[in-house]
Length: 144
Image (cartoon, rainbow, N blue to C red; front, side, top):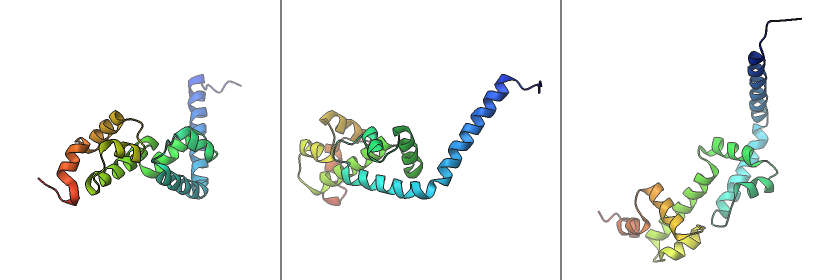
């Protein structure tokens, strides 16, 4: 029987059904996912100063990196890498303004793999380099 349906229409329909099933599964698993994602976020918060990778995290929590990445982005409004970077820079800002630690010690304490990556990430997120940040905001008081 020829219903007059083209292959393109069939492909669109199959794609729609796949998307619908994926979103339905995400919705129906949202209660379980909520607890899992909270455990995952807590793990990241507790371990962001270590080498932490999405693939390793996904394996540890029994899911795929792609799925975990999407869940983290939906939950936090930012990707895994952005979240880890923001935690590390937050700790760096605290150390810059509340301690006399040198930049190399801060790089190590915050989990960055290199001095250059730290400086580049800090400037990207804060708009200034760490030494400028320290000069402006040390002791919790703005010096401007």
